[in-house]
Image (cartoon, rainbow, N blue to C red; front, side, top):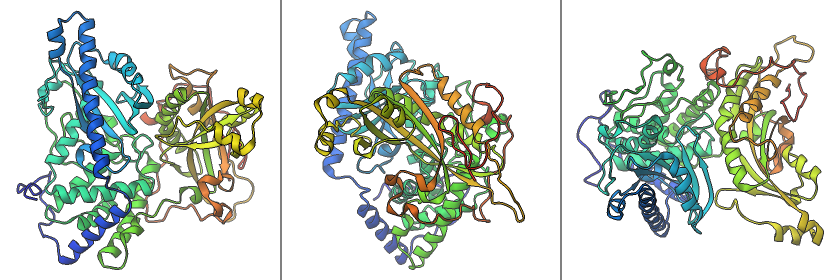
Length: 591
């Protein structure tokens, strides 16, 4: 415990309060830890040791990777071995807040003679040869290029940084800003994850309270479906920085108080005022540091949360008007519940009630990405997911559409098809439940043929000719402006042009193959959603989808703003569609 508290003042302002916890607040903190335990937030000692073993194997593989590249470039054996290579962890694992089944963000650091491209070729092939590695896919063109995989069942996000040094020793410290010299932007972004995580830990006054509060916020954000950087909400590092800032403002508070203050302050935060853990610093690079006074694009960030490690960047540039409105609504709900809990009038479990996303709207937009092999699908669905935010931005420009609410993840399934028609239908979201199975991380490679055989009794010919179609379905809940009093007739909502532009956008991907990759966008009523998403009560009357009056509605943005013109130039928008129509290829309307 002696290492938990740091006496110095941390943050860009003085603390709001230095008061310590009351007996009641300490009791509530104990109750909170028990609730987290009951929700499986802490892994067993056996699982923790398994992670250590996997990271040890990965570290040895990195050294072997560097050795192989060094030898291929003519290095003597002794120098090739001395070239080194090392892994660093960051994210939730490094922060000490990972749970059972959580992924490990891992950085591979290599010396200057190893090319980044070799990480995605040689290292990728080395991983592919390992029997422990499954669901392996590379995403070299991502904002932070990475390899995704499961290693002995543990999900790993693997990034690479090439330093301008001849040897990467085991005692390398990444905190030195001079290590960033002569690195390209991709390497700076890759190495920044580790540097940011270490800096957050340094800037937190009480690590024990921080970790419990962050575990709480992460569980809440996942249950309420606001945890996803790529979709337009906040990712793990942004939630960590928000909790760290509250800890700075209440350095002597216990975890229960930190959680309650978290919701109270963020519900009232004057966005786009940035959240900073320390003052921005200069460094040795000729690179952009977040500065809205100098850069117009930085002024467009709706909820700026700025990383504390040089060069400081905005971790929340993906937030849209809709996702901001949704998060503000959730902050308000969190404040109301946490206040009751602190008064002894509620329980922590109430905070973690799951989102009712699939019951909240009368109409949804369904985006279905399909392909005929798992390896292709992992790449194709990853690409569609990375562009999904662009669809939300386009939908926010549609007249009468108040809110475009994206679901935080794609729904993965595998369909076993007997005919060409079944394969075409599966790509359009039409399939037989008898031969369709949900997939999740860790079991993507499961073969369901034996189960199908038991259930349906396939003939020998059917078994030989059966084909798989892999699908990933993304959803956007559509909140439509209510009709004004006295309005008559059918209103028209044009969903065609944003969906057509989105389809054209994803098809511009360099690796797009029209023969093996399909994309369908269609409007679907809430009452027609798959039963596995809505449960038995899907026929119940759906609640109003109005945004509460005390939550700011997202403003319509002009089409010429930066976020709205990232898609390629296309033909003029197609005609408006009547409300209620559906188009399986290009979008439809809603009422």
